[in-house]
Image (cartoon, rainbow, N blue to C red; front, top):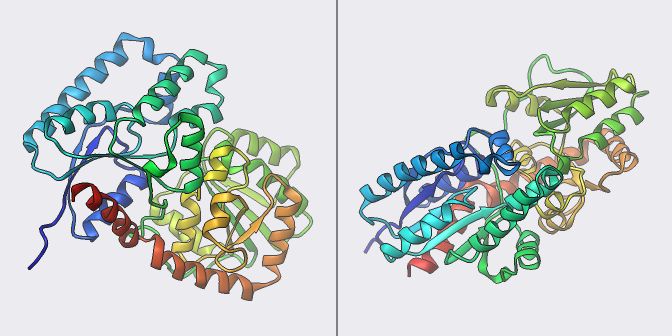
Length: 381
């Protein structure tokens, strides 16, 4: 006799385009779960959220927007008539979880929140407390209370769960662990371009945020400036991009080029053309506690990956087996690691093959959806 498929309402003003939400929704669907998205857009983008923390929350326009968006969200939810088994709040959901708790109580359904990352910690790492101390204090209190509302919390690593316990007093045992993974509909092995450069290409792509340690990458490029066979490619945009470009110009680097964001297909080809893909080298708490998207994405494309060692990544991936680890915020260590890998193509190929096999087994959308389904079934049962 076939078991009745689980029906999930994926709820909130979550970032619909963000990889974490796309991965969990598709992962659940691949495991036979019926996912109904009950979503309304609240935020215009990252800068919109930053501006809100810095004082935008004091303006009448913000509260009017909040009321109108949540009114539409409630209307969407009410049309479901409670025809679901579990209510899941997507990332970020620090505001959504309060409304979700009320609605789930009314229909006597369990509530799960994929908290994924602390918005409070992100605000600290962006230095927003120096611009609006009150806004960050209120954000911490909001997050403290929000963590206590769901029946189940989800996060990506045990290290991050331990941070929530230490910072917000939420027992780590309340968190189910679902790694970040990657969208394997976007990231998968493809051949390099026919006109691929002969140089050993070292690729960074991302949002140039402090936990990525992009200045360390540029410093390493400077130390390798006398080796014409190695070229650095920096793709993306973000807070530290201007400083990275200025540092490269100051040092007169010709072996380090910068490009803005690319469309997914173009980015995928750049990854395929790279000889070595870089992860992150910052030492912020968030950087140390997580295994970033880009690491999983490059493993999904069967590429050799070099990243900074840390509690989360070291626990998940063995050095020189699935990827290569070096000391963080240390340009000399990064330089030496790049030289090792440039001179050992067999090691790069072995890591790429083993990393890809590990990704397919544990970090693709199917395996991650299976983890999520196991967590949700315990609540539904």
